[in-house]
Length: 350
Image (cartoon, rainbow, N blue to C red; front, side, top):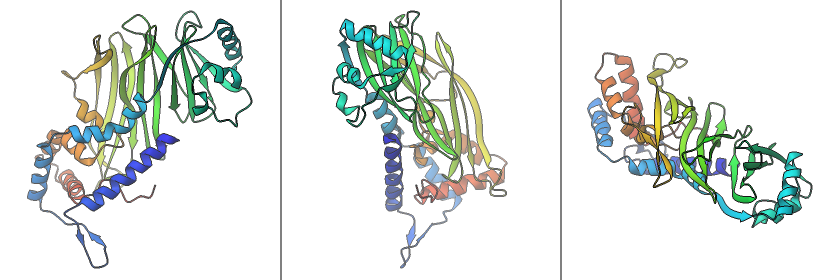
């Protein structure tokens, strides 16, 4: 739940900032904001001006939440006494873990386990090797929205992750570049009617630690009336050697003629290959033959600003404004007018 509250606070702050920073809206004596209707020429100039700016500050802001969660894990590399390890194996094989053993195994356990919990904890064993207790994880509290997961290399506790999954944790793995398992799971940041967001988090086992190797958008859904535009983005793992992700995505604007049928700005898909950087110990995307890049992917984050989207898809928007579809042109100009007036989201209370 912590990540959902962080997201809500971020959205409220963004709305407040954009409302206060808009230099174009006109305030009346009653403090009612009246949007300015800009000319097409002014809106084209606005479009061009966003294109000329660097996207990096917008990318950094949009990535703050998922990056902080991805990097905020507890790395340990603690050796477990043989008798305790045997007890751990017996308990998790019965889908339980005693509170006493948890406190004995995990340093600073009090920060992860409330004193009010006295009874054995429900547990799920996830094995990532042919031998069950070589490389494995123990998921605690699997029947809640957020699980605490202990990652082991035999009798070494390597790391503890808090994973907010909302609907059940799915742990997947493949043989990584070092011939040891690379595990990945979905981290949830928001979930509701017509709005949700998951990222894929990939971590590679070494003998001594669990290394973060890739953090990528997995599924984003943002439908009307949550925002000025609607979009869908979904990623699936299709190959592991080399690591290849398939991404399907689309973006829409309000249909000025029929609100029930929004206009598709674009709808596309691509396969993105990731190469292993052995020096930095991470996967890096190869965008050379892709319709996507880092700016475009990040513009589908729910924390992405409209300016980031405009910067990322400037060429596509410019081409549509030069085309023959006058109704779609009107929709784009209306969207640009809203953004220039300082609006980022629909007027919805969280």
